[in-house]
Image 1 (cartoon, helix red, strand yellow):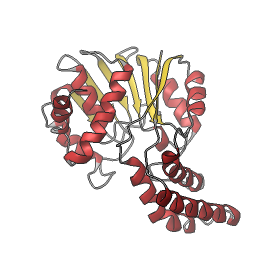
Image 2 (cartoon, rainbow, N blue to C red):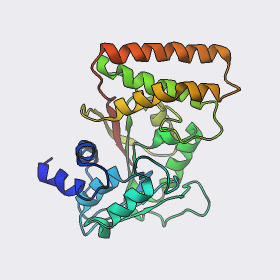
Image 3 (tube, rainbow, N blue to C red):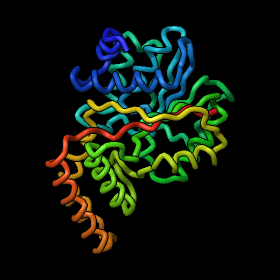
Length: 278
């Protein structure tokens, strides 16, 4: 992807340039892999702070439109909230070809769109925020009537190189204590493997046409997840009164492995599992 394209998109984003350039380059890889065309009408479920939204809006151009929705509250996220990020993006030169809405529960009876009103349904780096397999399957099933093509991306839990091991350990640790939480604001609430996602997709009536694993080694997410896990795990497990003592001990052992792993290896993010389904 040409450097000037990344620059144009980064200028529309609220976060710092150094971080955003890397994130934007990755999102453009995803959009390119999906084959989304100029002039397309896209529904993005789980738009978050708009990293993928901005890349999509740039690619579809002024003749296309991106409708981003997210169940999160506008005040979710740090250091920049999703609401502040969305406002900044919508006031940029890309704003005329996108819309972002929050507090939108896709599974609510009140949320609906006309049949086949979108060329693409995008679900990018947001499935691990969901609370269950049933929720993922329900969203995929409901969204099937709204669009012709499903474009999916999520971290690929299948380690491909030893440098990805610390990232995997961090999200694996989080996913274990998340099983015992009634509500959560965490980044990793359910760790879906590619096999889990495929099963949900098939149960929802979609058929995967193309799939691949994309690696963006400069992404900062591995370090963010590792730091978060090491900083928060004691508070997390101590706050869960129903957490079995044996599982608590296991998590503490895994944290030791994580501490050792990040010292012994260069840290690289997990790859991203990407597919197109119809």
